[in-house]
Length: 501
Image (cartoon, rainbow, N blue to C red; front, side, top):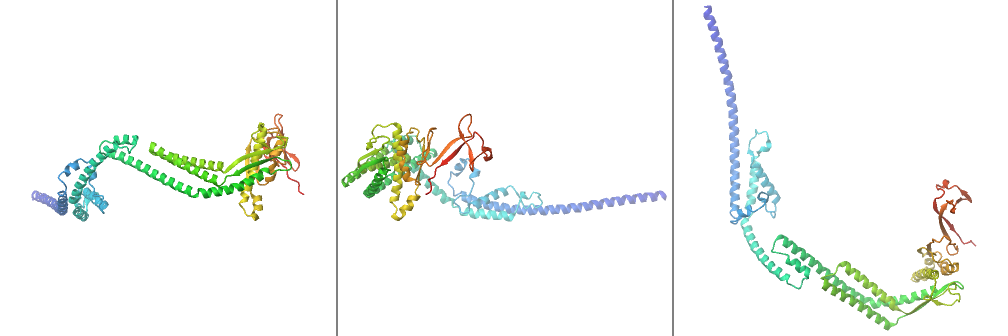
């Protein structure tokens, strides 16, 4: 009995273990079955989604092939000849929605490498939305129906034939142009280098056309400007000459009066001249018109010889013509011109003498200074003539003229010559200022002519050379107290004021 009981107990334990194992395997089998069922459902869903995607793809392919059938028979050769066929696969740029359709093409190509409806894929970029795919397909199908490639292909064939005809016509025109005398040697040489009709030749031809067209526009502009200038000159020349003659008569009277003005026994100029009459005015006008005609004829000859004139050259020649006209006018307005001078410091006899007589360099410098002062006084008086009488006194006090002369009195040291030559400065005091830079160390200033006299020298003197000192309230002060130093170069001024009555 004990042995039998032990055997029974061991058998029961073994059976229990076997039952537990079977239950565990049964659970695992049930779990595996559930997973397989879930995977089967996912595969069936993906299969259905891919079936729908294939249907959409087939529909798009059928629409695409229908459009391709409208293309000419040699379209595969044309595509193969492209450098970048993939890059050329874009929607026609003239389509109103070209950018949007190009984006749809890019999306379709990207989705072609993706799976459909795989929600278990970790990388979401590898799956696509079936609804988005269907929307993209519908967009492309609708757009393909509106391409009308057949009509486009027929239009292209017509355009190709038209281009070929134009190329032939252009070849004939180029051959004729190379022998045409309408072009100069340089232009014919450029035309001779154009071989055939290719992009480079067309670009060179376009550049030549732009150059010739620009030259033609410039020529037309110059011709129009010359005609307008001539008409304007002819229309206003008589009137302007009359005004110039009237002003010249008044200015001549002012110049005579100012040139003769001097103190008692002082130096002065005598100016004599006469204005031309009506007959001489008409002759002067004819001479001016002849100058203008000659100028225009010369410009035309130059254009014919050189094939055009640069704008800068044209402007320079026009300016030269203007100067020539002014010289002819001013030289033709006056007759019997003479200028004589009375200057006892140069000619003690006290009579008038010609400026052409022999004089020393210092005497000629004195005469030049005297004439310069007279011209400045004349300029002031001429401006005052244009003002009403009640404004002249105020204007005379307010008008100023300044001239700066470097090297004044470099060849002139005679005191009497200086005094007589610059005597007229007193008549322009306050209105005409002469500033002279005098390099003569032995010059002695005349305060009646130059009341302000500035001298440049060193402070305190240096190495035996003379200098000047700084004075405040009548006392000599240390230069360092004025932020200056001994031996420093500076200016000091002397101003002589007229005594108050």
